[in-house]
Length: 323
Image (tube, rainbow, N blue to C red; front, side):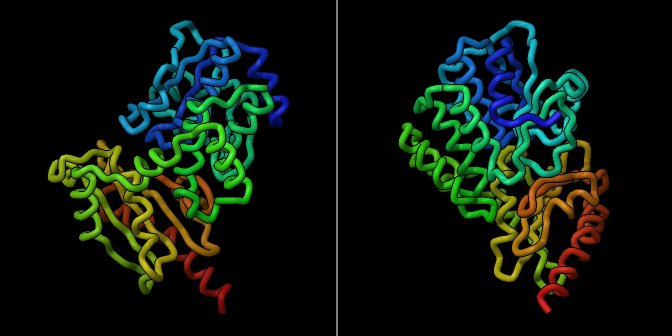
């Protein structure tokens, strides 16, 4: 059942003992949205707990500062920025996947798995929806909440560079700055700072970049051995996803990341009229027009073959449309 902001606010205000679920490979939007919503609920006297199938990395730790987590049995389960229960991870999908009371999301590929869904596919980030929802709930936007939301808004728009950025995105970001979001340090942390291990991983990834379809597609691949060589880890691969698309002439950029079981997660970034979500959907994934992902259960060579096969007709279709 689909619900609007007003109905969603009423659901949250009329329930308690919340469990907020983030998606695996947590990014700034799912974490920022969950922590901002949690802080808003706590300010209304509610008890809240946040869980994620993967560990939160240290760059997100500031969003949890001073946020008290409940240990009581959850009575109302909310998934934030989670388009599909499989994105909860194997453990939490099994435990909570069929019990989600409310999903708050902005992915057009949402599979509508929750009892109630607040979905705004034209929103650049889930954090934008949470901002409007907190206003609807009458929550005071503190500097801490503003910082969480700004992180979600800025990271899901590539610091306002991606095509999903709208006028409303800028307006909300400006309001969050007024409310005290530490936007300078957040921008520095997420967009201007590299660890030495990430820098080493980026070098290897760029050295291995390959081009296809007359240079219109660029693919970089990160293997488990590259983590060993650089001292890096999976959590640091997020920033790599945008690099292939930054090359002149590239319409589709792909980051292939080897998982522990030998399969490959493919993150796609696109320009122009090419829909990344359509490419990902061919391989069981989803996402947005400009950014999407899928997982291919095959080795490196086969995974590369399959993702290129999915990309080829989309690039050809765009070429035909431009003629």
